[in-house]
Amino acid sequence: MREFIISEVKAETAILVGLITPQQDERKTKEYMDELEFLAHTAGAHVVKRYTQRVGGPNSVTYVGVGKLEEIREYIKAEEDAEREIGMVIFDDELSAKQIRNIEKALQVKILDRTSLILDIFAMRAQTANAKTQVELAQYKYMLPRLQRLWTHLERQGGGSGAGGGKGTVGLRGPGETQLEMDRRIILNRMSLLKERLKEIDKQKETQRKNRGRLIRVALVGYTNVGKSTLMNLLAKSEVFAEDKLFATLDTTVRKVVIENLPFLLSDTVGFIRKLPTDLIESFKSTLDEVRESDLLIHVVDISHPDFEEQIDVVNKTVAEIGAGGKPTMMVFNKVDAYTYVQKDEDDLTPKVKENYTLEELEKSWMAKLNDNCIFISAKDGINVDELKERLYHKVSELHVQKYPYNDFLYPKYE
Image 1: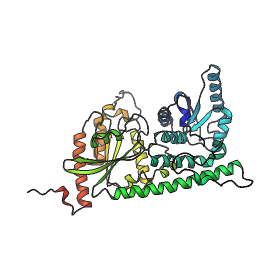
Image 2: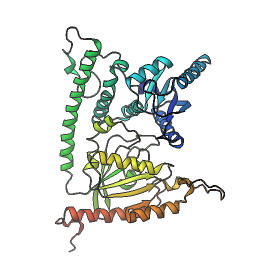
Image 3: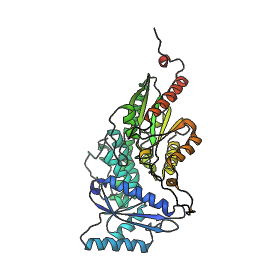
Image 4: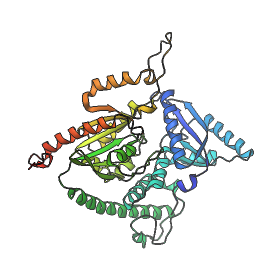
């Protein structure tokens, strides 16, 4: 079975390619490219050059124009002549099979798009059988329409990779079938097995959730790398893996937290990202059940990020897509310790950007919008964490009384 690219990405050099379009201006493209470079770094690749092109939209044949593609090809050849090999070219949008085929033919190097790169990182991060199964299913969904180009050969032995064994692939060959047709049938069969496995996992997790008793469920949601796992460790006094890389957490972690006399369940979930592959959201629905079935969402935001407002929109949209929109939500603006303020010159007449507002101005504007449903903290330095715990206590108390009005556990009887 074809190894997904992550095994090959490590220590390789990469070129990034993106577009400036009427829908995506130069500033936005730079932010997306910065994020794409962070993704590449997370996957173990070293970015040596970026290319952007201002166009009306992606070229249906080569994504960028022919001239830009030739420019990239010449750079790759010059690097090869200097004995500095370029390992791959990564494109900031999802490519079609046709685009991959034509670009690969022109550049003669490995071609990735944002989706395949994210899938590779997920494959690298997956630790449990549940996460591995979900990632493998998403990989197959991505590869199926690109099979003619991306799939070279499938192992014919029974084992296969991941959960499920692969024994169901035996006997699929038919007289006169082409390699492509057989591969397609094998993939579809494998996807069917993975979906069945996920159904079994869903049932197990549903039983686990039912056995958690009468406790309010709180879920941490947010963009990737905003500090959810650090906050989880702080509140739950646990050791959830936290790292300054994208998608450090894939599997949902649930911990029992007690503030004062009040216990509740806190879950840390996979981070969201712009242009998150639809197939990945679909495959990870069982993991995101913790979000759907929660009583309160804590939306963690990296206030130090220059584009944090768009990240908020991405998370809100994704939460709505998975059926968790409209839940009680507390906004937690994290990383106030990393916030930077840039004062504008008096003669600068351009509109203010986020960096031109002081932290105090941002706090006032968001407090005016959300009242007591937002708080500014630093999970790293412990700033305002005690106030966050106090607010959490009151919110969870209110929800507990609403959900379990006859449960007197919040009101201990004194002798």
